[in-house]
Length: 500
Length: 80
Image (spheres, each protein chain N blue to C red):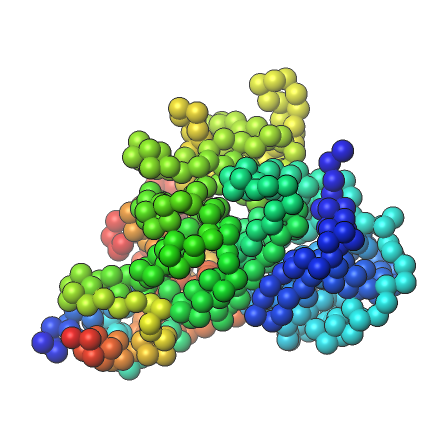
């Protein structure tokens, strides 16, 4: 029978509890500590919340306590909702209100109002208490929601993607088998995973839960380290990273430094990419600098649990393709292409958006596959095709873009710009560098503003109150009037041709 | 020589930052004003290498040493 992630971690904690689950600049955590501390916190949490079964927001950054909080929530039968410190206060409060639970667990200082925020000190103290009982019967299982991750929504309101315990276990069964196979791991052999993405981005699920499934170590790379390339490289080297998980953008940033190669990270054997397009240039550079490592491209939306396809990128694949393939679906997943759109069917398709049946019905459904069977299905809105044994993804059908791995609805930024009383019209466009989005440019019609740098700064400041940093357009251009199409819509093509 | 460095760096910054404010205020803090990010730095360093033949490794440089147009020019001049 398929084992749940909780069963797997419990058995490691009981049999080889001294193994390190997490390393970070803020300390480390063994499997035994993870298991016991989350038991203690779960008991406390369940007692405090009683009949309130709502999900629990876990706010913070790359602190080992984050994982203790995640496990504590699911051990009480409640989903957790990870929120990173990079989110602005306003959006955090929107998510907190949408979740609607009075208690928030926070491993970093926060200024969230109107909720009972349990601080790191309190969490640490609770974790020190002896877990007198275990809540086994209450654990999140089967179709229960394991986590909720909020993504950008086109109307300016974020949507909470709900992933069940079954979804997550199906994903990790596949991802851990893949890592085992690609790295030729012997029975019981463990690896050190790089954990780069913030927990509010589901790319972090790939390394964190795959690592736990393999009884391995997840090495957290916090924000501060990521801003100091020299110190970051030292940290990666000192922690013997074996399996790299990041967005392609992050690897590109590292590649800019010539010292980033197999001499520096001689234990690094596997690169796993997800979250945005992997370009041929980046893949080629990695293969050149790390000649004995494998580079694997994967693809998948948050709505279908991190990733559903994978492919080894080889010199031949790079040579024979214009864009890199995303590979073939995992066991349990089927892919259909309908009017160019990629549709994912199968056992990792999530349970829709939290408290948002309208948006859920637009993209989640049940569909029949060519084998005559019915599966849970998700319309990705991604454009793609199938050729010579592989699937390819060419971009988005709508105005959603990926920048540095983050999913961004351009409409979300536009709506927030329009909230400024000076702005009459707003349009946000991606600026491309070859096949990749380089940054975002906002065009605004704001006759009452002069349009100098002080105004740019003012509008960016307003946006920052509402949106995470990665959604703030790099540039804001003031224009006299917006080009309009025949049916009265903003003419993005014309705007792009005129200004970008 | 200094003129060439100044012109090259300012041209690159204007292109990368997408704003001519980098010429108007050469002490503007590019990081604080969100005019430059990690990938932009990469592009800047590659551009400097192509135009002036000077190799600058990101791991050798602290961000505080490279956060205004003037400081960047100073770092390039040091390596001429």
